[in-house]
Length: 253
Ligand SMILES: NC(=O)c1ccc[n+]([C@@H]2O[C@H](COP(=O)([O-])OP(=O)(O)OC[C@H]3O[C@@H](n4cnc5c(N)ncnc54)[C@H](OP(=O)(O)O)[C@@H]3O)[C@@H](O)[C@H]2O)c1
Image (cartoon, rainbow, N blue to C red; front, side):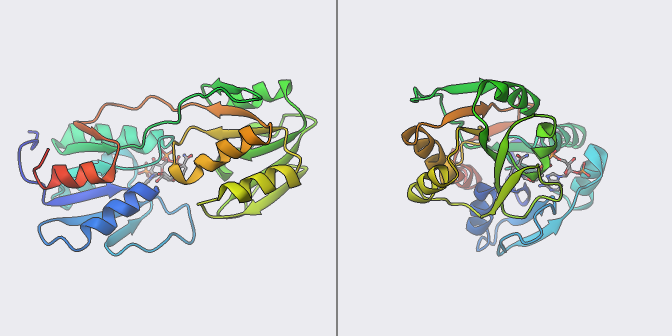
């Protein structure tokens, strides 16, 4: 039985995004809500959040359903990255099987814009690798360390990659830049010019902290290959801003 009209008391926030962290920081002082943040455990040095935090997978949708029951979770807030499709599918299945509410917090995607060198939308990471044959050799690849493998067979490129932690299996030849967002417009312009980047490959995360990368690419005459978002299962309620989740929790929406 769904508990859609019951007051939310025990929240499980599936995280890995800035929005999840902001939501949890806002929930920390609330005495009416016991929230737990769940992180996949892929970042070795995640920023600390002032609420109960658990790390690592649940063991598929059945494991997540068992966690929901064992911890009397009344609502799951899926605030994972728009490209984290597996955990979102697991959350949908586990909530369906347990009758738990599922809310989704997802920032809006970036809209295609007219850029000087063009915005080339592709449906997934392998399609981005294929599309690269049409572009110059110097590629700024900001797709996350675990998506690099799709590019290993692309010939005649020099890769510039960036992530919080160095990739275990870097592409060759490449330069890896370690960095944690936000990245300012000025820094992005400098990077694109210093490395003489021809094309930027990125996922349509919609993250405000990363939007300057697109503006800088346009200003520097760098082409953009945009990997668009996968389709996710519908949730009981969907929000695009942290403040709207907080209002809904307070019964104002
Ligand atoms: N994909 C991206 O581009 C990207 C970018 C930035 C941040 N992130 C964050 O990094 C994490 C992993 O992303 P992904 O793309 O590898 O996810 P994914 O493919 O959707 O999930 C893979 C497995 O990781 C576990 N998992 C993922 N998120 C979890 C969470 N918040 N709490 C507990 N377990 C979680 C689950 O394991 P079990 O099946 O064992 O439960 C899931 O089946 C996510 O939390 C996501 O928000 C992803």
